[in-house]
Image 1 (spheres, rainbow, N blue to C red):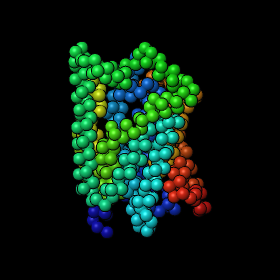
Image 2: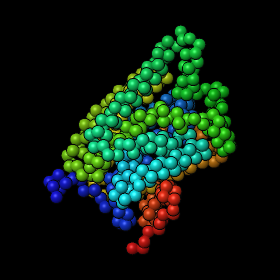
Image 3: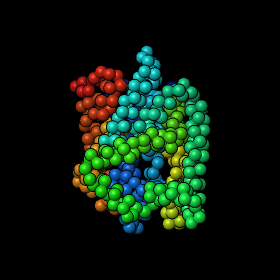
Length: 428
């Protein structure tokens, strides 16, 4: 045993149920558990309000000081970071599957692409039948590219990731600059550019008139109406999202692969190194995000500034904060404990928790359920978030003490291997 490994962070045994699931990495499960819970903290706005409110707190209703504080908290500490963390973990987990398939003598390419194919179908079903905010389609399509990078060293993966982030920044930077130009010169725009500006205002600005009325009627109406809207009005959106954010998503997945190969996600680095990453990353990113929030608010959440900042300016700083979060989570959970065990279990059932959250939240907010869409303020939306976090922590651990996988994890695994996988754990 080398001195470095002796000084590595002693990751917890997580729980007894893990011991008959060989090859699992505790840190991945714990960080994934935090990520899947954190994603809901941002998605809740998309579930409970018109989507424009996701980035613009003035887009729906009259926000109170508490609502604005909630937006500020989310913008600085949550928005994009949990999705990015989840993307890091997806890259790491995908590499693990490829490595284990190769070690067992199976066809790594066959297993990988079957997994991505079924994930794509899950994502399309999720988008068209349940909720418009799906990320699984993007993960499946971006994940298909990852196989090409499986043999690269960590340095190569990081360099490719940085290159893709530069591409993403240039692309979104041009979009943001265009939005700022239209905002500044709104009175003198030609007819076509003025039409584009109006569309951007409808998407990201205050929701009013018939546009708002139609949105409320749609989401408070029958399930069939929502499905029809997604199929015929938003049918291409899952694929447009990949074109729009694909470079950044693949970059994060490559960073996750590098973090696994380097030992970062295995908890093999010295504690001082994790502390340095966490402290330096947060010291850089938090003040920058706070400054960006001030910039947007000081311009009264003008749509041009919202787009330029939220889409473009955040790109170079988001991965800094994601790495810092991952390091901080590994540090804080190194001694285990009852809460850590439950977070890890939520991470092991992250696919089920993600899809289950969509089923639960759409039933809570949409017209075919309780019909709370548009009725809760931004700060009040934290109530279902915290309640759902508690539910994730309560069900995941006892379920995984009896079964090897979460329900959707089992289904995905069985479909990808085209045979039913053993579900129940052997009695101890």
